Image (cartoon, rainbow, N blue to C red):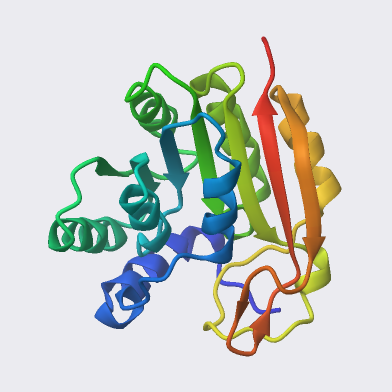
Length: 220
């Protein structure tokens, strides 16, 4: 599967989200509906890799306090436009890139919005970053989240590499779920739920083989 050079990811996503066409999809992803039901007593949701904001806006419309983070300045600008157009108040956006010096600060800033429980959320994010960035993601998440907080992730697995893709070729990994679970465990995350298969993230002719995991932050 064709990949772009990892260093070009920022340029690709800025160009992608600069198009108004990608902002028209307002229905939440299947994973967002799942995560909203799995949030338990969490009132705060921190989304990483919010993209066009459809899931963040969905969470906000359903009563969650939301802080959403993305590395694309174009995506953040579009998300803020959508928030203002819908008159949503309890949702804010931060531009920050995983692996950067400020990413951990962005997560801690987001987590400070609530003294209660929180859920961090990242859909189709892990396979869009490098191996080293994945480790940085779990490290910074572990430092920012509190004991008992949950982290919900969904990503393309190694079994999806040969499948049809609708979006244009760009940097994309195909991830081994066992390695994700092992990486998360290194930073104090315990698996509460894990499943993989087809049918969870179908879009047009792209029926991605994905994994879903819900982790809980263990005591230090």
